[in-house]
Length: 238
Image (cartoon, rainbow, N blue to C red; front, side, top):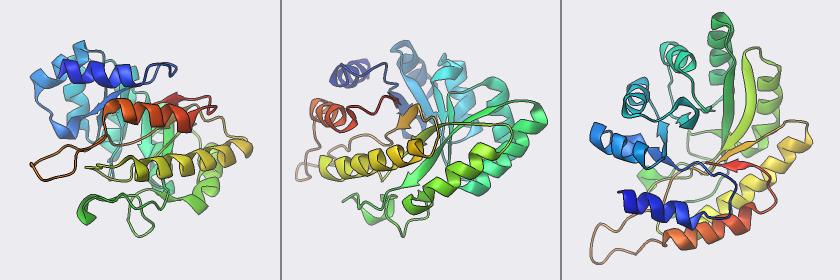
């Protein structure tokens, strides 16, 4: 595990302080999390239970991203109290709820909207999440309105943008297409006056589960693509 963490880190060499965040839903075992914490990885969590586990494992609050749909007010409040790098927000309605929770606590919640880029992941239909007919995230053509409303809500600090088109991707092509589209949306949002500093590039590379299945790209190939596509973005990548 540590070797793989180091390989991924090496593949992103040259980027300015990228945060490599382990998706805790992949394996929430406490020993796994503690091992990855010592390897200086961050964490992507989708529940307060996962949040507690990564904190207990030694991952610092400023290396935690809270993703996922259906966050409850209690989960929002506990994560705010404990601290985190960013909430990945799925909808304007969720932003309104988070605003109310943060304001009642006297806190400011850092957020980034999950954008649906309408890109087919080329993976299994049940685990693709980035096309216009999927329920996840905010449609690209609604991004400006979402950022405008969130920026006007109390208790929120709008600092990020995120994309996640699916799991088990064995080709770089859909990822590159999604990242290019995200870069266009990032520019549009910034041109409207929003100071976006964090960009979460979503899920990682797929794995081969059988002898006859396609081999995924190497971390080095992924890193080269990320560096090429995100050149000039002037952001911290997750």
